[in-house]
Image 1 (cartoon, rainbow, N blue to C red):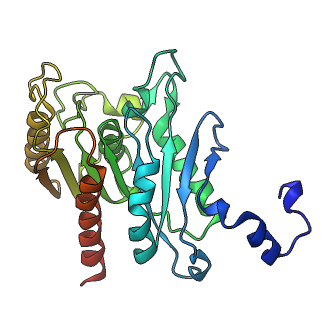
Image 2: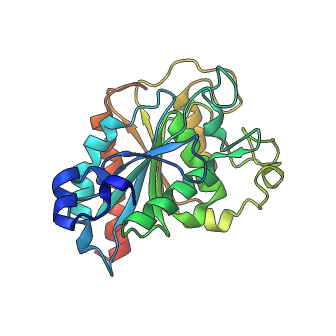
Length: 275
C-alpha cells in the first residue's frame, strides 16, 4: 500500500479517494510501457462468491476509450460487469508505428499476452471472473479482437468484430496476416478451429463503410471484406452473425454502434442463463 493510504480506516479511505480506484488508468505491472483504464461498479463488494463478469473494449487507431466507458457504464451496473480498456500507445517500437498491436505480435512483443496480464492484475484488485470475457473492438480494435479469437478462443464468452479494414481469414493457403498458414510458427500453438466454433461472434459494419481500402481477393472496401469474412466464418462452421448498421460509415456514431454490441452481449447472457 502507498504511504498516503497507510494507517487509515476504510471510511477515511473512501472519503478521501471517492472510489477513484474504480475508474482510473493503471499501468501494467507485467510491462509498464502499457496501461489500461477501468470501470468497476460501485457495489462491487457485493460480488464475492458470484463475481463480476468482464467486458473489454479495445481501442482503434486513434486510441479513444473515454466515450465507450461512458456508453457502457449503465450496462455494466445493471448486469454485473467490470470493464477494462487496454491502451497500446503508438510509437512504441518504431517512431511512426501505430498499427503493431492490431497483429497481436510484433518484434517480439505479444500484445495479446500483455492484455491477458492486464486482466490478471485487475482480478487481483477486484472480484472478477476472468475465465471468459466479453470482447469488442472497432476498426483497429476489430483487427485485434478477431485475431485474439483465433489465438485465445477459450478465454472468450463472446466477441464483436467491428469493421476491421484488414481482417485475417481462415485461409490455410495464405500466410498471416491475410491467412493462417504460418499461424503456429507465429503464435507457438495450433489454430484450434473446434474451440473457435464455440464462441458466439458478431460482425458489425456501417452501411456506408464502402471507401476503397486497397486491393485484396477479399474485396476493396471494409463492407466487401466483412461480408466475405462472414462467409468465410460460415464456411468453417463458426457461430457467426452480421449486422450492417443503417445510415453510418466508418467513423463516429459510437452510441449507435454500442447498442448493437450490448444487445448482442445481452443475448449471449440470456442464452447462457437459459432464459
